[in-house]
Length: 259
Image (cartoon, rainbow, N blue to C red; front, side):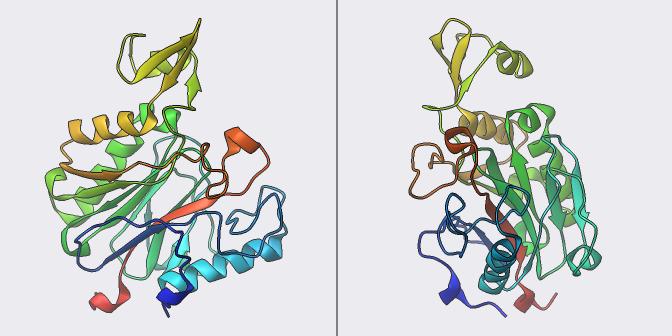
């Protein structure tokens, strides 16, 4: 059962006016893990105490009233379609960088520590989805694939879907090389890539995500204003710390919707 009192006041949430849908992104606060995973690390395979991670995941589930289904993320564009079997204890973990569901009580969840999480919601909560968008997945079309899956499941148009960008590496810290420019077919003079030194640019990952969502027909795009690298007190960042925890962005259909 959900208990909103268990949600840490520092967690992020979209300002959606969306019936039947819940969504949030955790920060590093609200758990039991010790440094350097302090405190709400939600991923076991990073060197943290497995019992602490299990308790952190239990706290998240209790706070949202839905079962977060985590993925084996590989920086690609595959989308997993989640059902009740995926939410059962001991279920196999799907390899994908995005997920969608039409069933209440199942949380589409992605884990991040610099890559950009993007949450999607269709009208009346007919379908929801979450995508893990690092630059590789973004260039491969993970956002477009997730949007298409949500629209297909909800039988709606892209313009009816709302998208929210969580916290990720900001444009002042995301230094990239020519391989990233090539992946986006961008030139050094693109406004999304600012030259920093020979062969190095600062890339604006949230802006690149917004561009692709708008091009795909999504009109309502919000969020993306937090930098994980810049705020060590609030966010985990792999690029900044290397050994660190993972946060989660989760979207779900409210079980109380009667679906």
